Amino acid sequence: MRTLIADGTVVSATGRVRADVVVSGEVIEAVVAPGSEIAESLRRSGDVHVINAADRYVVPGGVDVHTHMELPFGGTFASDTFETGTRAAAHGGTTTIVDFAVQREGEDVRECLDAWFAKAEGQCAIDYGFHMIMGGIDERSLKEMDTLINDGITSFKLFMAYPGVLYSDDGKILAAMQQAHHNGGLIMMHAENGIAIDVIAAQAAARGQTDPVYHGITRPPRLEGEATYRAIQLALVAGTPVYFVHLSASEALTHVAAARNEGYNVFAETCPQYLYLNLEEHLGAPGFAGAGYVCSPPLRSRHETHHADLWRGLRTNDLCVVSTDHCPFCMKEQKELGRDDFRLIPNGLGVVEHRMDLIYQGVVQGELSLERWVETCATTPARMFGLYPRKGSITPGADADVVIYNPNSTSRISAETHHMNMDYSCFEGFEIAGATETVLSRGRVVVDGGNYLGSRGDGQYLRRSLSQYLL
Ligand code: DUC
Ligand code: ZN
Ligand code: ZN
Image 1 (cartoon, helix red, strand yellow):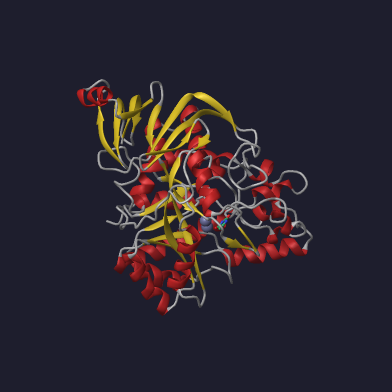
Image 2 (cartoon, rainbow, N blue to C red):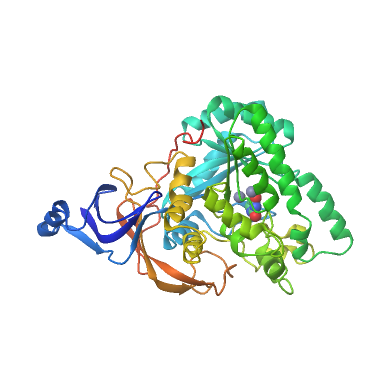
């Protein structure tokens, strides 16, 4: 069966063109001028499903390379399962996620990975891959990094935060980076100085400063900057690229930009929450409402330079990817765990459904070009994490993951209408100019006009290649 996406404006990372997109089975067959012979003969045959995309953008399905479905954290689990989280992603025009399998000190990497395969298998609405969180670096786990690469796990996240949980010291980080230098894996870094943060957080709690806002106050931007600088030095010593996840602070961006200016393979992503939300209004919301905004790194002050700098970083490519760090917890029974002590609030926000819409607002507001929206939300994440050209572009042979986006529609984000398994929304009331109208995942329409037409288990596991950004 073929589908003809007719008369839309096809947007790529490098330009836009009015075109018809021909989909055959699960892949893109052709991108042709509107009314060209191939499209017309398809119409005449009658054996084609035509989607009218006039006055719409036709963009590659979003690729969110940072999600945590069902992540165990602080005595609970992220509230989206692979089923609910990937369905919500599809509603928002994201057709691929890369989630994180987790290994901790003393655990066998392979067994941990298998546990994550088991959680996701047969559950996902869209295609999915895994990175591996290496929470326990030792001789055995270092060797296992090599074998994971053959199974399509080609990136490894390390933590400079969360001492005693997922934290790696500098020696362990260096050893993992050296391993990546040899096996071609990409090191992803959560850069916050967790040792110092824990001291500051304990001091605050001892003073009775237990409200959610202290989560942010005790994780100063300088400690993200310091960890970012340190990780860059370690990566340079090991001779390996490094990719910073969820960069939130000007102090960190400065170090990334400086390293890139010197010619080093240093990369970074940011997330919508760091562009739109802030410490004072959101994390500092009255009562316990701020708990709904507790994530790490924390939301940053609106009185500092972070938000403007992050938009600028996205324009200049010092930030090359937008992901979500999707890690939702309900207020009821989950965020509540930290009512008396901000240190016990599970860290994370639910964003996977709204990334494409929120970054598109940057286009509307003149922060980014349309092409840059596609590049940061689909093309570069696919290239960075070994999914390109199968994902992240509308070109012949690529998977037919396509979003038909209506720039003339509007919507309003609300917990009452979102599809994530969360009892609140961090973006409640945000007015969105533009809307995801139709979503194809490997050639099948899975969302149309807000209706979900797919099924649990449609999504396939993606064995990833090495990053295209290694050299
Ligand atoms: N940060 C979060 O906010 N949640 C999960 C893990 C992380 O690093
Ligand atoms: Zn992290
Ligand atoms: Zn994360």
